[in-house]
Length: 318
Image 1 (cartoon, rainbow, N blue to C red):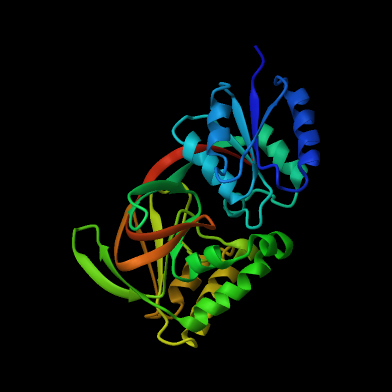
Image 2 (image 1 turned 180 degrees about the horizontal axis):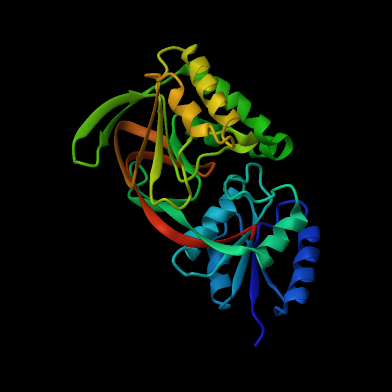
């Protein structure tokens, strides 16, 4: 019996016809049955399409879309053991970048999806409460409040499609100049509570942004830990020092001296890192949050945990 491949596809993305031709080539090469294509629908992100894909009992599911489509597919597929082949067609494609997939080489991406090796990676699970009531969601890249959430909420989708990451500049500058801060109670691993003021807080499952920007130096996709970054510059000019620290880390991220260089950098009170399997936040007033670049509305509390190595993805065999 031939193996089955199902393609979950965001039909609004460009270059779908070229992707289809490459998939057909590798389907024939490796003896799969004719692929089934299932389109995502607006407002769903890909959850319903992925559920339909699993009903086909596939041996491989290909996800064609941006980080939002990948996140929706992962929310259904984690724990199933069925491998996902990621064909990134979004603006950031951050999960693909952190998996070292060749995001600008579509042919190589499809080849890896069929011929690469399976890797099990972590999934971050968030349970929140707030004005919209109790909700839960997963994310694969990062969740954040403050500047991070403002970028997601205030960036025009048409501008993002046209200008890519340049579209984020306006909300970044606006949030930086405004320098609003939230009061949050952080429940630590031993049960102690630490009350803090901060401008931006990010929980990462992986650490690299577009353009090779290394935001969280120690983040790994399969270590069973969340990486937490809190930013609290006292003035607008405090962002300059934060940018310098991040720039240095980004410059040495592939160097064998990375660990030594990062540990030797000056410690700023305005930037704090920690690693933990569980994050619990309680806000004095509701805060906007984003998951993998998509706004998720306001929350008053959040508990984030790790599902260790819960999602199987195809990566380069090399």
